[in-house]
Amino acid sequence: MTDSGLSARLRQQSRRAGLMVGLTMVLVIAICIFGAAVIYAALSRPFSDLIPMAAPAVQVPAAATLTTPREEAPAPAPTTEAQSEAPVVDAAPTEPPITEAFAPTYQIGANSSVNFRSGPSTEDPIIRALSPAEPLQYLDEDQLAPNGDRWMKFRAEDGSEGWVLEVFTEAYQP
Image 1 (cartoon, rainbow, N blue to C red):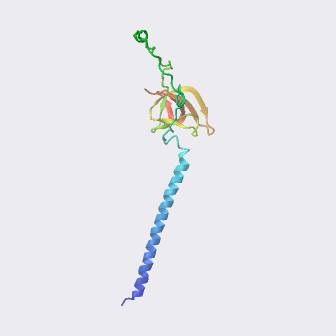
Image 2: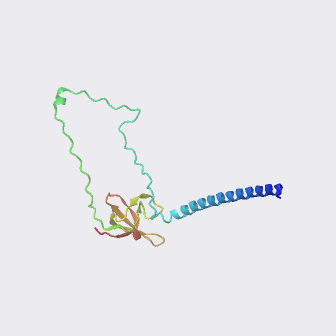
Image 3: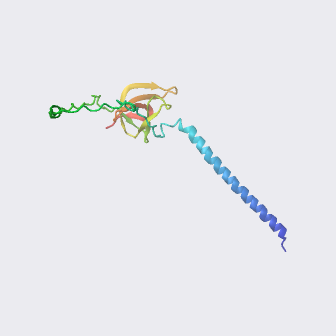
């Protein structure tokens, strides 16, 4: 003998319990995801030199134009036979300015890439990420951070200049 009312009540209570377990699981998963995002955001700033980040795009100012949209360019002067027969002389190619030769004195010593910054602080923008063992030329300029870390100014092989923490560098080994 079974009581049909008792069976119905037990099934209903079982459904409610299953629904509560499912809602609790969803809530716990949401809290874990949100907590991980908050922890990552809080720790990404102090560890930004260990986590390579994409450098912000640098906008190059547009070159000045000779005419404005409202002005019209002057029409070319008509050529005569004497002018058209004159030999055309090419201008001498301009040579790039002579720069100091790249002489590496240090290299990146970490096992992962390190951020190359425009200034001696983790607050300064990232120029690019330097790969391990990338050669650098020390520019005889350094600065101490408030926490005692030493920032050193370097030139990379591509000619870009920036700052790296001393702890991520080592003497150059060809």
